[in-house]
Every structure is written in structure tokens, then in C-alpha cells.
Image (cartoon, rainbow, N blue to C red; front, side, top):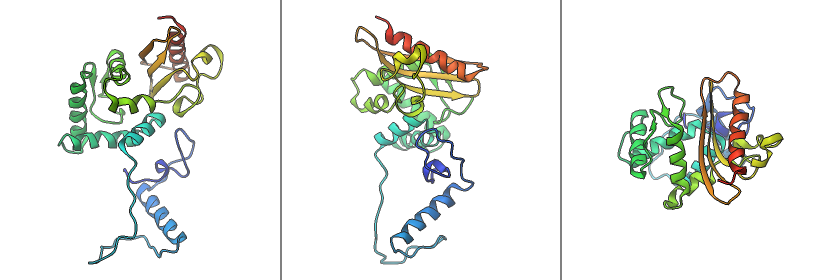
Length: 241
């Protein structure tokens, strides 16, 4: 469900924390809200109620802008938020906020960007085994966002984790032969059962901006697969392409 606090976990979980998930996301979020109201002297109880006629608004909270949400979902691989964003794209395109609506809307938007080739998805989170994305299709999409011709796509690049510093890359590129990529590579990670992916941008020794996408399928050791992908990204960073 989309209603949650701290990613639906028992404690703050900015990216890949070890906090376990709560059993009831909406219930926990509602209780937390009531606790804060009581903390500030507002009588509050959890339950169903209706707004009485003539009631006065006490306060309102607005969502962060979509750009901030996109940065968060990229940095922390937030699958729930990614699915929600796909459905917002559907609503923007006048389609139902559903799996089918989101998939169709994303395809239409990618087609409008000239970056639909090699990308066929049926959900927003990427968890479905029916999704099909080629490395070239993913690299083409990253290049489209990084080219600078569409300023509205800038968030896609700046939201990606930075090697050795932030998000899902914070603990990678810190030792050995991949250390040279630390701070220079921005990339989105993708790790599922037997699959590891890394796609992003880097600047080579000649100062040229490069977009890349590496994928490993049928992986038996995800740790080794991620290390190999990191090595590939470090190698192109060190080259004079």
C-alpha cells in the first residue's frame, strides 16, 4: 500500500537499512500520525470518522514534488514509490492508475522521447518476470536523460547513486581495482533473484560523458556479479574513449 511511514519499516530506512517491515503499514502510519498530534496537544484517536459540516481546516501537508520523489526512488531503489510514479504517469496520460495503465503510459512517454526501443514493461517497480529490457535500450534511455536536450529529465541523472558515496552504491567502489570509480560514476543498481544490473553515466579520462548499461543474468553469486559490473564501469571510466 502507498500509505506508510519510513518505507513501511519499524525504523527509518533511507535506503537499504536492516529494519524489518511492519505488519500493517496503513495502521502503523495512522497511529504515528495520532501520536504526533497528541504530542502537540491535539486530541486524537484512530478510527473512522466523517468531517462535520463547516469544519475548519487546521493544517495541510503536501507531497514533495515529483522531481524529489524520483530522486529518492532512484537513490534508494524504492520499488513501492516507483510503482506509484508509474501510476501517476498513467493519470497524467489520461489512463487508469493500474498495472496496465501504468505500463501503457510509460511506453507512450518513452516512445515520445524516442527511447522505447528495447524496453517492454508490465509494471512500474520492475519486479515482474515479464518485463523485458535490453542493455542497449537501457543505455539509450540513460543517454537521452543525460544529453541535456530535455532539461526535465535532469532529475533522472542527479538522482542516481554516486559510486562510493550515496544510496545503493554507498558501500561499493571503496577498495581494490574499482576504487577509481568512486565519485566518478552515477548509476542505478538493479538486483533480483539471479539478476544484477548497473546502468548510468561516467566521464572518461578524455572528459567525454559516457552512458552505459551492464546486465548479468542467471547469476549464481550476486556478490561476484555486482563486483564484475563495478569493474566494468570503472574500466570505462579509466579509458580514453
